[in-house]
Length: 358
Image (cartoon, rainbow, N blue to C red):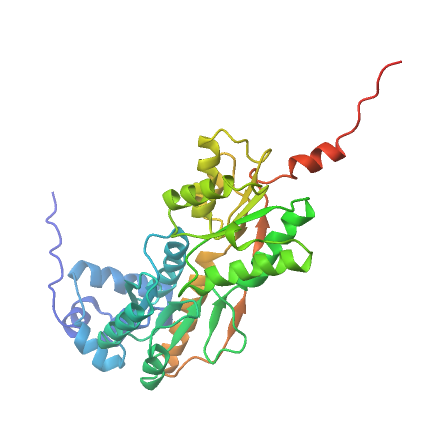
């Protein structure tokens, strides 16, 4: 049996260059700017580096590049399929350029978000992605003073002085309300997230109210219930709506988790959905399509938004300047599934009459 080829020793790039025949400059470029190296040569260089177990010194590389090759993101909670999907898209884009991602959560608390952003800045991030419009004290000023690129997502603001990537939550909620009005519903309930310090939740309630008012339908304050985004909280809130003197024929929920909890409460009470009551969600997380019945909702292209955010942060880091105010607004797709149908009274009015035999 032939002797195994000994592995290349771990050492400087110059040592690896002398032993492999690939220049140190090319090896360095593969580590820091792989897109600038021809695919065949890049593959050969990556094999050399992997075989040697070469790990570049982060601090030294940061001094050379004047960047740390890290980005930050602060989300309201890590317990969210939507935010997880956005972060996944962001990380996918960053990893292609050898960037690492530092993740923090704010628990929907502006002051905590400010603290997390400050900590990320101290870590030397090259850019950061934030969620929504309601900021902690001094966050924007802190980033701008240090010329750190940042984007905000999950909302749209064409007048913003920095990039926004998302959708119009008011308009999207109006679209859902209009759909339910069009199929005949007139008695509504709303299960919303906690609107304090959550612009997305507040805008969705505003959109629901605006669409109903425009078409002359009243939404009593008692028919709007705010709860944390959990199944248990949603079940309790749905029970309250069902106990009203005139229960709603349709309940609009601020996201799919609330909609799923509302649906479960109805099923436990043996209410037929959608025959007796319709339920809608928002976001179109995977669970919405796979419960029974599937949840009618609005589809958010979360992964793509994360990728777009990553692309803008990478471009700004490469140019070493703040981002221009570029605004991406996605129109959310209405996905109609099994939790919605015309109300029972409308179905009875439109049902064909049976002829009495002579």
